[in-house]
Length: 69
Image (cartoon, rainbow, N blue to C red):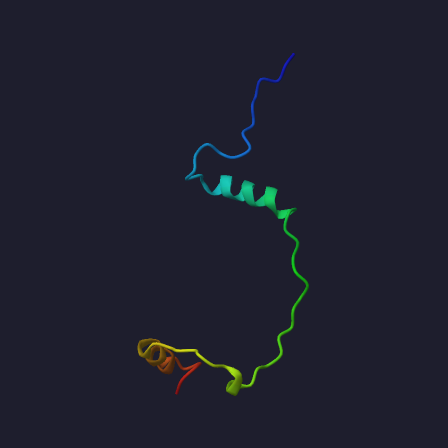
């Protein structure tokens, strides 16, 4: 007897559901290797140039107890 089921390589529905997305991720997982752990060294603030922060964002961070005050 012949198996007449055809499996498409990708779902025909481009707005797939969560199960479809999880299946796609599971198939791709073996193609991507996790990078080695990279440890960053601290950078002197004097070497950080050209960073601008909008005033509204700066005020927002100032109002957060973890960052401002």
